[in-house]
Image (cartoon, rainbow, N blue to C red):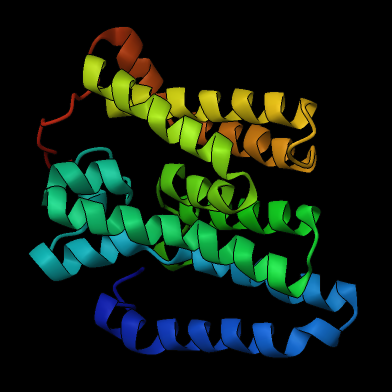
Length: 238
């Protein structure tokens, strides 16, 4: 989101166009060749992931650019430190919804686990490197989890549940998030081995998990140095 594209303009112009494109894809692409369906769904999944809810809501609520505070990221944890719990909860729900919508779109239009994985990963890439914010986004936890909820709800729940005790005990959101990613991946691998889920979903959890952990590399360095921010610490201006 550059200075030329403000949240009000984005919500009044870009969001309706994107919603119309998703609706059109759902209504018209079912009978098209598979290549055409992929060519439509994957860019849409990326654009859905690119919607910068954290940035927009902080602009509306406080008139600030969240990229200038705390970690500089646009996800839930930085929104929590910068704007408080209520707006962070809303951002969490909306970012989860991006992953859900991308995977549901692929399931309806293409109907294969491989397509769901591709769309989920594109949404994750969009969240982390959004075209609307000059490719400067978040870490991908919520959007990645949203995709996994549709593909493999049990491992998604295990990952989310694993996040809670680690975060409460250590008061490090980053450590809890990475622990949840690892727990979800291991649970999914085990359930794939038991025949409960398609093995391609483990590819999503593995590749998506690696992307998410890579996006936490600054947190990992601060954890090693003993300087990582704990839950409750406000974000300072960069």
